[in-house]
Image 1 (cartoon, one colour):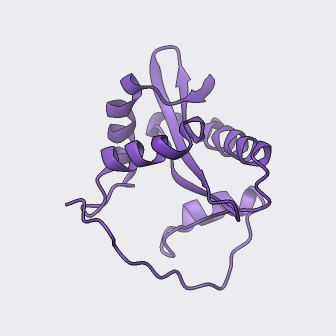
Image 2 (cartoon, one colour):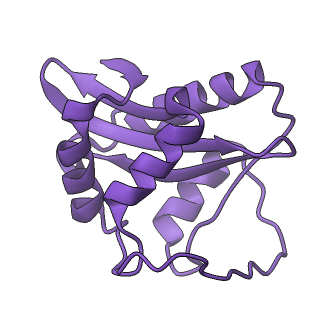
Length: 139
């Protein structure tokens, strides 16, 4: 398995992976999310590949104060092989190299399996309410 920055030819397989993993939402255009992330830190938009198959992805972001993880996904038939852990570790390493002191992520409160996964990686749950405001409508 190789973890590397996403290339143009990876975009459609990544979007398909996200759709299969249930990560996409009608109000977020995944193609635009990729484009926007690559415009800031292209080296933080990562994929895991095994031969010619794309088997995982994660997007990391850094705003100068803290890092964020988004769109972590592993191919359904490859779950349990450590691909997600490897992607998170690589994203954390790249954020650390940028001087990022802390990384956070958002998980829907109903997604117990994913919450357990991040618990096992040492992520601590916070008693924080996330508020948001849409500035650009994708859909």
